Amino acid sequence: MTASAGRIEKQGPQLAWFTEARLGMFVHWGLYSLAARHEWVKNRERMTDADYEGYREHFDPDRYDPRAWARTAKAAGAGYVVLTAKHHDGFCLWDSKLTGYTSVNTPFGRDAVAEFVEACRAEGLRVGLYYSLIDWHHESFPVDGTHPQRDDEEFKAATANRDIRDYQRYLHGQVRELLTGYGQIDYLFFDFSYTHRPDYWGGKGAADWDAENLLCLVRALQPGIIVNDRLGIPGDIVTPEQYQPLAPMERDGRPVPWEACQTLDGSWGYDRDNLDSKSSESLIKLLIDGVSKDGNLLLNVGPDGRGRIDRTAQRTFDEIADWMDDHARSIHGAGPAPWPAPSDTRYTLRGDRLYVHLFSWPFKHLHLPGLAGRVRYAQLMTDASELVPLRIDPHRQAQNTLMGGLPEGTLTLQLPIQRPDSPVPVVELFLDPETT
View 1 (cartoon, rainbow, N blue to C red):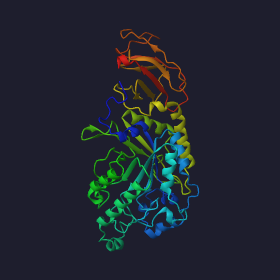
View 2: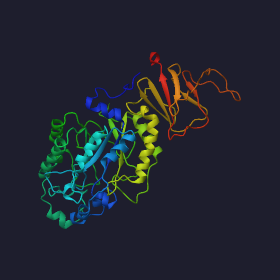
View 3: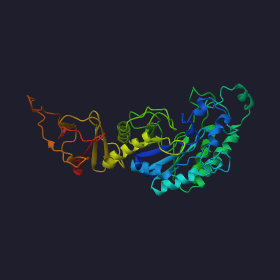
View 4: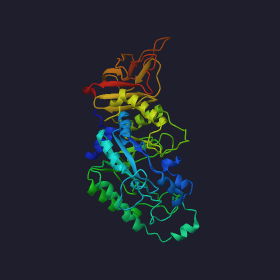
């Protein structure tokens, strides 16, 4: 049995690196980082362009060091990093020739995307760029239920004749810039279509973006690129956000590559007073659970207004790095296994090795249905200490300290009483190829 068993058929070569990586870092960073009140601050506080202008005038991230970001991602075991080149506020982190609303025209005065791309490549990481289909700053983007001035009747009347086709030309032109100015881009994350959202009146989707032609442009400029599913038409992967799927994702009844997009604290951009941080253990479990379902985890960080990853986020990524240092081979290049995992465990399979991730620590014994006779060696990954299998007669009667028989085919391993010092201990099983 190989790691590809039961996985998506005819996987294109552009997806091979993606499913090998399993973990990516998402970086939300821009003018909203100075506000430090969520990346939708302009929307939430109904700010006008004039209200928001102060952030552009003071955007001077003197600690911007994308190489440090890339090193943090790499240490945690991420294989790719995705940067918000433009978020919904319309501010561009590159030297766009189609607008002056860019990082070059701030006290910072630099092309942040260029430096980010160079930093990722220097660390051997794949490069991803996020591009918002929404633009609250552009003069041709029609006001709708997401717009900061959605309740300003005077503004809505003055902008009633905005033509989305004018914005389409801008959108396509900026995507062309990003895909021709920085060499190979491995992943393009569009965000987002919302014709299906009743909470946003005037929602926009594929027709508004001219999505079919836009996707053709992307494919022509970067034939090997991965594109997500948020143009309103199918992409290469699907991207569940802020929830964990119960099972492998499907499209039209067939398995599809997927990536769960998750935050550290519920906010994507830097949110100074948000202390609702997830534990590193819970995030490691999300990663493991996703891989067991043939999915990836894109884990977000929101650097502050000076360009630094804050201490809490850095500590979380460092703790993930500590776990990955011992357990990376249970994640990278791994996928689902064909056997049902026992309660409170997750299986991942990589070649002839099956990994049992223990979300809770059993008392003395680990019972693995259907694996008797299939495993030639077992060990704890933390210290490579052998775990001795026990042979228990299925028909044996339980009596006092004598364990009763277990269902035919059950493999039982004897565990130490003390749980290893790890957020999620992992048992590595070397499978007998002749029985799998």
